[in-house]
Image (tube, rainbow, N blue to C red; front, side, top):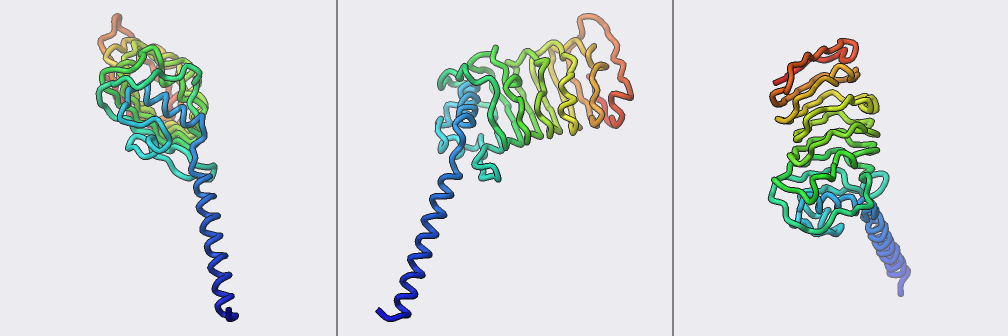
Length: 236
């Protein structure tokens, strides 16, 4: 074998080795952590998304979940559950108390008429998600606005919630979301907004509240110190 041939032979071997190494590294990075996979499966089962296969390939290959390689590994960055009838596809795992989505930036859930169990509250599980900036949930099965929500959402900018609750608790924990600029809440059963003056969200720019007929008349007194940059208030 000539020297040139030997050179090109070894060059080919090096190139092939690099390709194989890159493939293995890519495969290793493109694996969802199991707790994140299980969190996605909980959502699929609760909302009856039977059209999504409950595997990483099925979840990341669906239009409802967007998975990407990030600096911290392979993660779900967007959840978009839209409508459709509920179809049983398994019981949500009872051991999941909070979701594990470390790189999730957007959670959009628009449900149909049914869920697996209306006593299960997705808001309880949306905690300690450091990258989550946008939450939009329309779920008539949600009847309780947890007093602990939102907790551990430092980048939350928009909260858009349509549910079937009758009241909103004082959102003490909302101080953990210092970037929140938009709050949009709708419930035709909502008849008590007496907690609103207790909120203190200095970054809030827009508030939109849609609610039903109150059982007794009440006043809403908004303190300028609580909402110093508020530009838009819509109450109906």
